[in-house]
Each structure stands twice: as C-alpha cells, then as structure tokens.
Amino acid sequence: MGTVSSIHAKLIDVPLRNYQPVLATTASTENTQRATPSHSHPHHHMSTETKKRGFLVDMHYFRAFAILNVMLVHILQPPHAFHIQADSSGLLTVKGILFHNSTIYFIFISGFLFQYLSYKFNIRNYYKAKVINVITPYVINSLFIMCVMSYAWGYYQLNYYTVIRNLLLGETQTQYWYIPFVSIIFLISPFLLKIKINTFTASTLLLLLSPLLGTRTGVTISPGMYIYFFPIYCFGMICAIHYEKLLRFCKKYNKMMALIAILSTAILYEMTCTHTEHFMLLNQEGIYYIQKMSILFLAIHLLQALKGRNIRVLHLLANYSFSAYFLHIFVGKLFTKSLLAIYPGLTALDWSLLAIPSALVTIALTLGLAVLIKKLAGPYSRMLIGA
Image (tube, rainbow, N blue to C red):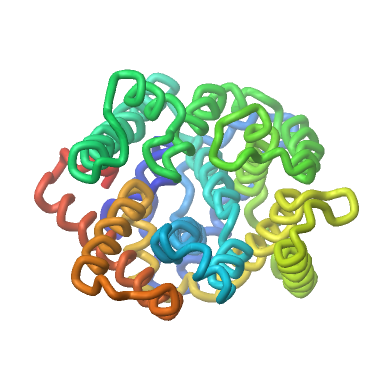
C-alpha cells in the first residue's frame, strides 16, 4: 500500500502505513476484519484495544469520498465576479445543496481513525506529531498563501495583526478554519479514551441530537461549531469500536437512508429556492446534518462493494487528501486567473458550462502538485503539505 498521507491520518497522528496491507482480494479483507474484534467489553475504557487492527479498505476509500466532497464545495463554482449571474442557472444552488457541510464526513473519519488506531496510543507522541504533521504545514501554507495574496494579488495589506488573526482563526483561506477548530478536539481526545465504553456510547448517542439545533456558524469558530461537530467526531469513535455493527446497520437500513437523503435534499432545495429559514423546528444546518449523515451511511455501505478492488484514483485521493485539503482552493484560484488571462471574454454562461470540467482539472492539478512536492521535498514534504 505504501505510505498513506491523508488529512485524517495526520489529524489523528497515526500514519496508515502502520496498517497491515490487506487489499488483494475481498476475501482476505473480510478475513482480516473478522479476525479483529470490532468491539470491547462495555466496562473497559475506550483505550482497551491493544492489538494491531487490519487495514480497512472501505474506510480508506471513505477518506477519498470525504476530501472529494470538500474540494467540490469550494471549487465547483465560477469566479466571484460571475456568482450572481451563474446562480441564475442553478449551479451554486445545486452545488451548495449537494456538498455543503461535507465537513461532517471529515470529522467522522477523523474520530473513527483516532479510536481505531488507539492500540498504539502514546500521549507524548500524539501531541508531538500534531505539531509536526498538522500545525507546521498549516502555518507554512498559511504564511505562503498570505504572502501571495498580499504581494502578488493585492488582496489586502499584510501586517502582524492580519497574520496572527488568520493563523488563530483559520481565515487565510475558506477551508483553513478547520485546523484551529479541530486542534481543540485534539487536546481533549486523549481524555476521551479514559471513559468507559458503555458510558461514552450512551453519552455520544444522546449528543447526536445536538447538531439538529443547527448551531454551525459558517466558517467562524464558535461554541456552536463544537456543539454541531464534536458529537460526530465522538460518533466516529463509537463506530470504530462497533465497526461490524456499523456495517450491518448500513446494510439493513440502506433503503431507509436513501429515502431520508432524497427527502432532506428536496427539503433543502425548497428552502433554498424560497429563502425559507426553517422547516418545522429545524433550520437549514439541522436539515443538512440529517442529509449528510444519511449519505454517510449510504457511502459506507456502497464502499463495502468496492473494498476488494484496487481503485487507483480513490487511493490517490485518500493518500494525498491532507495535501489536497491545503492546496485545492489556492490551485483553483491560480487556474481561474490563468484561464481568465487567456480567455478574458468568458461570460457567466461560459463559466456555468465550464464549472464541472474546471473543477476536475483543478482536482487533477492539485493532486499533481502534491505528488511533485512530495518527490522534490522527500521526507520534508510532510512538514510542507502533510504528504
């Protein structure tokens, strides 16, 4: 399998190269998973697991699914100058409904892998790796992009206040809020392993109701963001403990999840088109939570059918998901500026037609740049882009 450099692996400080490579056939994967208990005694602590657990191809592919959704919500759109005109075609509306709140997939898999790989947990190494593998590339990329946006593109005047604010609040780019946000979760995650499994499970299932309050505050870090996302992180941990039960649940209720996904998507479309803020007692973020969780269960079920196949594009997306997370918006801006420079006469209609091809090109360029940096920087690439 090689070294897996994904945002989720880095955020939990356990490179997936430490997994047993079980990919050759569906049968071998299933045998490994059956040989590894997916749950512990309910009175044991969360960190009871001491044995190395098998490589989960389906969850590896889920990382690819998660980063793909995150990238599409940011790059599947025209330049800002064309937003209003392009939205009349429905592009931004459909994009938002399908991909907004894909952070739910992100935070889920982060919690899942943190718990799944807790057999090798060491708190000193955990915090040390957070600084080296997460904070360092975050700071380096933020400073680089701030310099480009200030000195090359003239977006703003760079000063100490702007630098500190952008780093602390994740405001350098749209997606960067997640790092300072999740850093707080990193700080407390080791203590979650001290909680008894039955207590943690019961508490998490109760907390899963809180995202229905729809307290997400866009990309601004606030207590409401933790009320919204932290239960999903904890749920990922629970699903790692009860992995086989998760698979059975996804299989048994896949039709119900599909129905919920369709209905919630239809409700979101109606709310967006009519500018309605609430549906019954729920606001849009509450409905998005229902939609994305149902899609999450569907994705896990569908990826089970693919786990016996060596799908290179999914491996590539998963392996470089951390790098893609840092780079995709910046690469998208570069591509857009280049395209406008070559074809200055492009209209809003042109951009509506070019949106999907442009997004695919941006994803390809992002992955290509990540691979190139990794080859050129060698072992230092992890501190640069997390690869």
